[in-house]
Every structure is written in C-alpha cells, then in structure tokens.
Image (cartoon, rainbow, N blue to C red):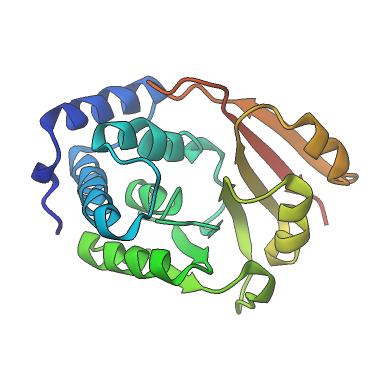
Length: 216
C-alpha cells in the first residue's frame, strides 16, 4: 500500500476530527487508506495535474470530507460515480463502504490511469474504473445510486444517466449553491426530490446534495 506517512500527521488529525464532525464511523485502518490515497494523489498531481488542489492539507476537506459527506444518502449496493476525475467521490466512498460495489467512470485517460493505479495500490477490490463517455457507457446491469460531483447541470446529468438507473434508483448530485434554476429546468415530474444542505468541516461556502429518486 502507499505509505500514508508521506503526509503530515496534522492531516491525519484533521481527517479524524472532520469524520467525527460528520457523524461517521470510519475505523483507523480505513482512515489510513484515505490518507494513503491523498499521498498518492499528491505525488501524481505534481506530474499530471489531476486536481487544482495542490496542498494535501487542503485535500482533506475539499476531497475526502466533501466526498464522505454523501455517505448517508447512498442507496443499494451498486454505485456509479460519473465524471470521477481522480476518483472523487468514488475512491473515498469505496474505502469506507467495502460492502458496496463502485464503478468509477470518466473519459479522461490520464485520470482513469491514476484511478486504476490507486485502486491497485490501495487494494480496493470493491471498485473498478471505466474509461468511456457516459453517453456511450453500456453496462450489463444498472445501478441503484448514481453519484456526480462537479460534472454537469442537473438537466444534462439526468439526460445522460437516467437510463443507467435501476427502477427506484437514486441520482445523487453534489452542488455548491442550491441549484434552483437547474431543478426547475430538469423536468422532474414523477420523481421525489430532496435538497440537503451539507456542512463540510473546514470548508467554506455552500454545499448541497440533490437527491432525485426516480419512480418508474
């Protein structure tokens, strides 16, 4: 496994405190994997520009805690992360939700190469990476939850992913400000919609999770 000791011990303290503030139960061995992921992302980022966040200490709230905040809203065992980039939120969720199966989807070859390397080095057997545009993705089975983070507007997300959701599935979109205009334009008749305000420890600004449960 990647050596999480490459990261300043203060990052570990920040992660542990943030997890407790979120009200989550993440055992020490999973926290070590989360720090190992940050160490790996930090190392690759120097050469491949995978994320605009350069400081590992800043990655704790912006990448790890922001991803983990949606844990209570996942539904079912089969989870698709669309536009995963360098594995967000899919890798942190796969680390802390080992009984669920995660598919991490992105069309960017550089980022998917990193994701595959991270899954291997972290020993994550419950996640796989797919390099393909979501519009062309044709899995054998659908998903119970589709999660997106900084991917597209809600109407575009629904257009691209609705066919991939199992009946009764959930679309979980992470947004900054409450996306009133996107919600109005999304055509959500017949769906149960809930917008949850998220408080991410040590992260300023608004954060919301849009939960769309499709009834079909």
